[in-house]
Length: 394
Length: 160
Image (tube, each protein chain N blue to C red):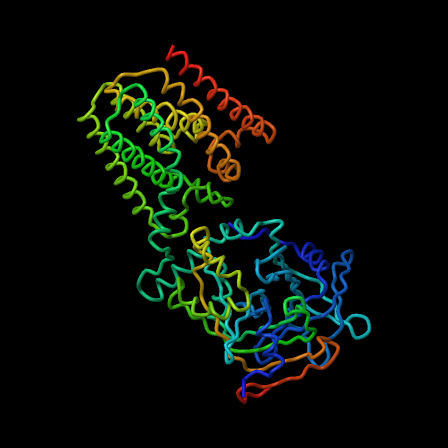
């Protein structure tokens, strides 16, 4: 994967023409490069660039020289703006008067308007990997990138997304309590178990997405999408990530078994098993729900009815009710929308990896319309759930 | 006496960007815009592991140059300079070794501290090697005009 798109000599020349001056550079007979700022005159039709011969310096004719235009210019206090640079290479030849001309034979550059910085960085991951591999070989011991433990945990498990778990679980518990069922111990265990399973799903999704090439293909991740990328960055090994996922699943299963022992019911067992299948099958073969265009549905089902009803039946001892199901609908829609929105920046990489998400399958207008319909439906469901609650009280 | 002429030192201390040129395996110059950091004796630049091709070139050929040409990056000063020197790559600790230059970097570009707090968002960008340049020869254009012969200073007694 190229970090930056290829730049033809002609394109390079056209870009160079946009800079107020160019840095003319060549390698002197001493072996040191030397640079001098020159004003250039670009003739796009002729494919040449001309400039005054710098005084007191001998520009070589027999070796390639370069001309660089740069707008990499930090702004004091807030970073950069409009970062771009371009270099063209070619042989200098005498031109009119005391000027020299170059017909570029190659070019290279980067423009953040074409490739945003984060994408440029993601496209350069392979270079970073090779850098650390070379350093490791040189030292005879593994050298890896690092993050402090709190940041690594945060990034690896995608901890902030736990809110999507805690909301439906607590809602289920609260509805159960309003129906006269509340047991503090199992309520706490339910929250812990659900969180462990959610973290396990987050981690295992990265493992399966990496195994299937989806996360490697994604060069436009955002802070909220594209997985944790800790495997891609070399912060955690694939094997380590798989072990972490298995450990979290084991912890979640242990809590689930404890809940079954304490408040066991066929409904809880069914919800637990279905939740595990949906969670693991989201990216794992053979189901690979997200690859088959069922990812949004799986998330809605998992974070809506399954979480809410699961929390409810733990408290009720297995008794089901309509209220938690109805209340789960807006939660399901809103959590699915979190996924939906975050699939938009991932759509290029997802399409490349064969993930048939809704933003991959539908055009821009349909994706926007889908979002609007889901939001309206979610809030309509909230109003409807209030009516159900009032009706049930009557 | 500083190894670098005073006007060029002033440029180095002010410059928010300079052009590092290294020599690739084909003997071609390759130029990278980077922030120069000057400690009064040597010039430092840092390179992320993400963009480490320049480090490979330096390891193969340590002869480099750093030019300061952008008047906007030096607070409007019109003078320009190119410093030729020998570079070495310091990469004992890519994670934190480069942070010893943070005080100089922060003095020049305070936003770096805020960027560093975002390390979790872009961890590989902050895995960095240091490029240390020992200056050998300095070319200086007082009015920035390439039509004038540059003043040339040899540093540490090496032949021009």
